[in-house]
Length: 361
Image (tube, rainbow, N blue to C red; front, side, top):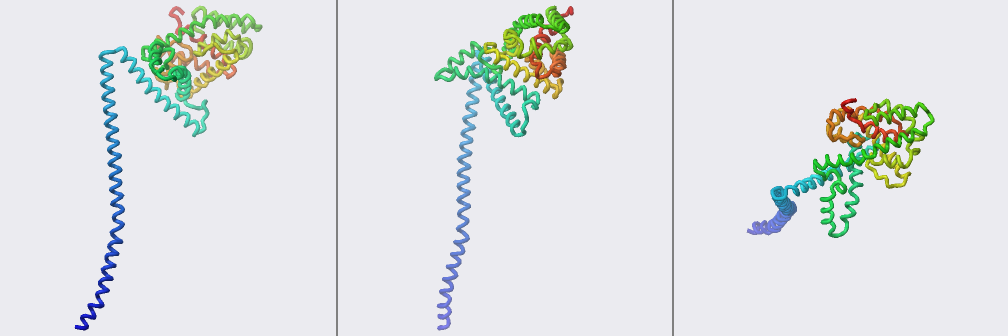
């Protein structure tokens, strides 16, 4: 009995020690398992909150879309003319935002790849040129809309004067054709004055051969015939120096060249000359970019736009006629030097005024 008591007395501390170790080990093993469980609970809670917000956001967007569709159907049914304008404005903002993203991408690529503007593909060069012109035209509208509550006045002005205040993104297809016709009529109004200016300049030319060729060219245009590229190249030296070089021609002649590029002539003479020269150089670079791309790679809309920018009235021309004219134009322009920008600008009148050829010619 004593031995049994002794064993029990010895085992009691041992059992207590073992129990303590088991509890300690169990606690040590079990305690880390609580942290992942809490993390999972927190992740589930956060996911549920995020998912709820996402679902709420989707619900709001879908409701707004349905409300907008209902509003558009209401306008289309009860106010069809206003609906056309509303649709044009909606489409215009979408196209404008697309242009902003596209221009940002092009400029980022130029910085990253260290590409000069002259080495860009044609479509990217043309996008930058047109975007810059659009933004310059939009500046007055932004200034007008700056004061409080001026948005209502701006909307009325845009409705009444879409050609003067809005850029092309916000025009309807009918307005685009109409306004291009108006703008071409404005620049065609200056064709007779430009031709008369060339004849006046011929009086001061001492070289009889060049003087005769210039007068023959003017007479050919006056008669309604279409000059060929060789007719213009024959007098090219007159447009790089006196009397028709960019820095030698009269202020009056420069002011009549401005409408060809849709530029204002109400500026000092030196500023007009700089603007004409820079715009002509830009178009010459675009001509070289078209050659690199390949003329037949342009679609019908791009063909018409390229011809229109270079002075041609494309309202009644077919894509085939535009292709023919632009091909001749590139044969002429890609052989010009940077010092011959005056000849480039005058040819926007000489090579366009009688195209296509009259049936009797």
